[in-house]
Length: 274
Image (cartoon, rainbow, N blue to C red):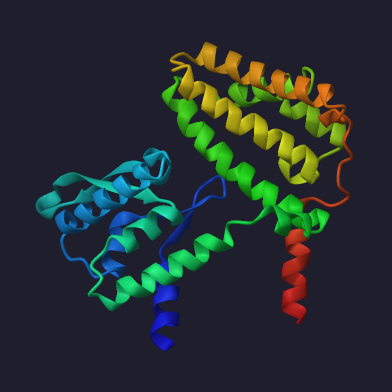
């Protein structure tokens, strides 16, 4: 049990959080934890994991985006090396395709399988959550969705991401930008609008996010102008669908009394007291 706890701590120690709050692991750091000494050998495991991902019908790039790093060499020289930003699911696939004779691989399989399951939730489980719990769940999905959308938008030629995201908001909110939404909600400067939405409003935005990414890929959008237009059109389409279903327009949905950041802070304070 001690070994499992020690290994779990190691996996958590090398976990990173990006600017969108999405967790990831660097492959070269994971390689060390999984007791691989040579990158060439570990890369073979990564390639097997990529194949497994693709065979499951899941986009490989979303879970195995490659990054380039510059390292210092002797005598002041520099060298560029390949690395990967791995999602938890990617780490799980790597563990599944690793050397099963290694005890640490078995521990990794258990750790990432359990932790991946914690990120999932069934429809029945979701219906039993409180409104605030639903908000946290939906907010987590929008963070991941926005991260993935940004990667796809970047490939489509987007450079001004504020303008790109505002195009989507304008479509969904009948011309309102992110600043307009923040002012209407009475938020402070730079306060996150998504942290101040109810679960229904977050769900509408999540649908906008995922459908925009899908359309950018499907239509092979290559310019920033077309990407912005696509985002606006998808937002407007989601708005039209809500109207046709007799739903409440997103700008008419109530703003929760407390932001998710406030709730998070209160939860931490409660835990400290206990």
